[in-house]
Image (tube, rainbow over all chains, first blue to last red; front, side, top):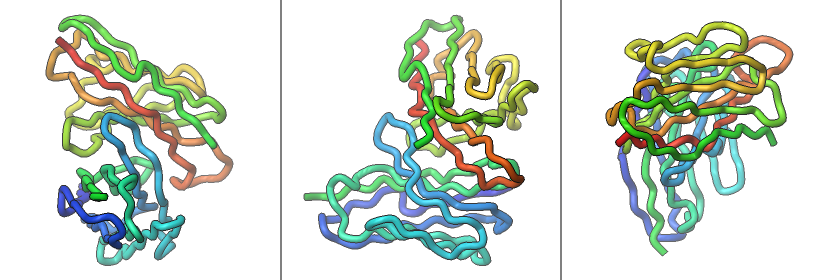
Length: 111
Length: 120
């Protein structure tokens, strides 16, 4: 059974800092991996999707990497801003598009 | 971009009543829709997979008679929580897999904004 782990559960950084969020998964047989953002009480916003054949994806200040063999992914956020404060969820897709989510990392960026 | 509309965004109901949540794909056809539940500070847990025109497939531990799922068209799936109890209070989110030609799990998934259910 796939398990996705995100540590730490919460992170607080000063504005402007570059930061890395980590995600690990137990079964490397995945189709893709996605990073989502969730604001309190809201739904999910897809940030980046990495196909299993890819190593990384970039969008603006965000860069996500995938190392399938070691079961790891990182989300890199450059020059963090208070508006980046949210919960970041990592999810891996198995057969039939079923997603297994981690518990998320709650990020707080202090002005 | 593709939009999934989930309604209502929040609902409060009394214990013992039933609540229906709708998930609509507004500008695309969705052959498959997924229903998730999220408890506070927990990850999203897949409840069931809904395929248009067929019975839903429920994950282990999810009561199919309590959580009724109907996927009558390529743009609409509904989740009905029957005889709701306070422990059913949670955040329910649907996602829709965009229908595209070709095979594989790489068709985009689009998420609704979720429904906050509170059972008193």
